[in-house]
Image (cartoon, rainbow, N blue to C red):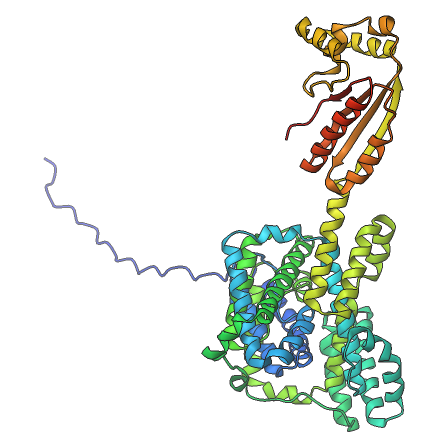
Amino acid sequence: MPSSAPVPRRRLRPRPPQLPPPRSLPPHLRQDFAASLVVFLVALPLCVGIAVASGVPAELGLVTGIVGGLVTGAMRGSSFQVSGPAAGLTVLVLETVRTFGAAGLGVVVLAAGLVQTVLGLLRWGRWFRAISLAVVEGMLAGIGLVIVAGQLYAAAGATAPHGGFARLAGLPGALAGAVLEPGAAASVALAAGTVLVIVGWPRLPGRTAALPGALVAVLLAALVTALGGLPVETVRVGGLLDAVRPPDPGAFAALAEPAVLGAVLAFALIASAESLFGAAAVDRLHDGPATDYDRELLAQGVGNTVCGLLGALPLTAVIVRSSANVRAGARTRASRVLHGVWLLVFAALLPGALAYVPLPALAGILVHAGWKLIPFRGLAALWRAHRGEAAILAVTAAAIVATGMLEGVLAGLALAVAKAAWEASHLRVEHTEHTEHTEHTEHTEHSDRTEHPDHTEHREHAEHPDRTEHPDRTEDQARTEHPDRAKDTGHPAVLRVRLSGGATFLRLPKLLDVLEALPRDRPVELDLSGLHHLDHACRAAVTAWAERHAAAGPHPVRLRPLPGP
């Protein structure tokens, strides 16, 4: 018999607890980290220079750059646009500070940010793309001219005269006078050297060209100033927290003034247009996700609202930093957020380093930035292809230089609307003669599509030959009723006048001149089938002319077909 000894059980060894696998770093973090350092180095001198040129403490430029990175940069919209203080708003900020003070600047920026936020929530971001590109380029060109002129006076240590054209006219004398004074000559030479370094640095071979030229120029200018003991002014440094001054509650009462409301609308319009046009340009530099214009406008609005609460400069998307971000290999929004972190670290730990930066070097940076805003090559190409658009660009820039930012932009928009209305109302008038036999031949080719009305209409017309035919009656219907009219009556050749294009009140004088010059002893056929638009003024004028012309002559006026209202 088989043994009934118990089978020993296997002892199960307890398995050691399994630890979760270590989390891997977010994808593309290395590329975004490297790109953020490049953007930080590009943004640092621009933030400081734009703040000084705007008449506010240098720290406020850093505050705006920090908000552009940490707040606007973290929001959706464009993945690669970098926001911060922009040279394109320098002129408007300087005018606002001079008119309303630094406290008024915070109120204006805050209100402009709220306007942008509301427009973004209403999904109006896409409509900013309907602004004429010539107006935007003319606005930037005008801003560039004002920046270049103003900063050259600052580099020469001279006081700029009032009026844009007076500034441009007085530049040669101011620069010539600066050469005769040692201190002013050193300042101009330092600014000129800064521009030369910025222009020539990217052309150097090797990896040295990867460093931003503006940063290298500032470092070299600070080194030359310190070693040579040059008698030039440097940046005045205060505490970061001391520079942040939120607007007082009583300052918001200024929003009831028309001048303040005009400044708010100017900030909102110009900052939004510059940001969204810049987004379209940045999208052409990469193959990543395209910009959501409504979300980008919302992000810009939230950022400007925060800047207004802190009393800082307004922000907008900046093409220089954005293109540097793309070329440095950024992959996500993390690069622009990290650039805001580096600006915050610098402002908190190394604000004293700004005291070594000479003001002429910052003036040179802005002269180069303003010069880049002027589209010299684009203007020449635009003049060859579209002279009307080139004229709008030039008028907008000249108006900004002569009057101011808001007035110049409104003048450019008005001119662009007038040009569009004029082109939309382009009217072409052609008139030819046709014999009745030819008319009958043309009719017979299309007689299969013609309906035959009742003969009473023919008898009614024969009794009243001077009446204008009803607009709804086509030529083919009339010819079908009497195919042998030319043989029986021997009527003279028909004058056929054909209108094509758009007939609006702008072209009404030309249209009436042509119609009233037609002979009254000939039958007239007015062909309106080529019109894509006939406004109320032209419709009434054509109908009235047809009645007068038919009543004064022996032949009717045929209208075929009259477009519906």
